[in-house]
Length: 325
Image (cartoon, rainbow, N blue to C red; front, side):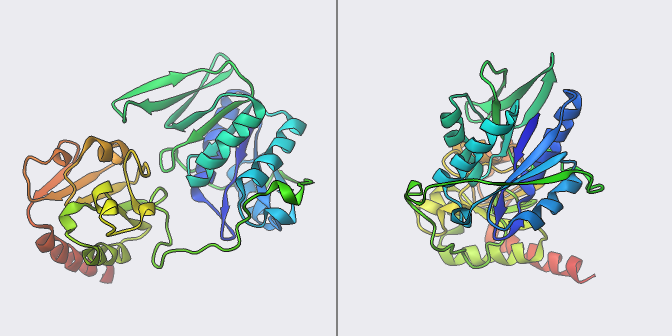
């Protein structure tokens, strides 16, 4: 049985988790087994019925009032209790911020290995194998597992989201006992940056700025573009984040977030290898830079050699024409 962790943020199921569930279902079919999902939190049964159409045979709802907000200690203990009970062969997570925090803790509790940020899964000889990038995306390695259960996190926006069908599965509610003193750092409040409705890892379009933006105020130009593009988010290079022009949550690269959007637009980003490691898997890349020798052009599908402060207003006007039609 393949178990997929379904992430919930602000009362909504994350798309990246449904992508992981869709991939889990495909591999479950190959391995002649079930794909089951698990939600952890409090008062989540209604969301379980949103997950069922994505081909989950069963949806486990593990609940405790202490799990209303995400807690690595609490969630890992809840999942550990469920895994000990149902004995899955494979456990999959989305490689989101939560998944990257939670999966290693659960793996440590179970005493098994973990493959992170995988971009492909393979059913071979009745077992699951995964493919993940190494050396900053310069090569890929195929991994098989000796430990059980197999654990892996899957990169968002890489695995196709299945079409929802009928709600044929079963919702199984499970209570879990967690001592209150086990949660050492409970979350009291979640504060979101204004205008950051979509996480950069889940956006279908990422509009990023680098040192060429010349200041924090100019990132408003990128926010204006994002407001005209559906399912989009603002990204940034490390140099822009280090200069305090934009928060770290927007950073794309080896020390930031890895993204795989349908479209990545880079304004004023030179293309250091650390940045390319975080966005080179994007399906289509557009780069705008005054330096014709910038490394970003080596990975770009379309490049503009020019001043971004002249390009952005023109692009904005063209987008307005399209969106008004």
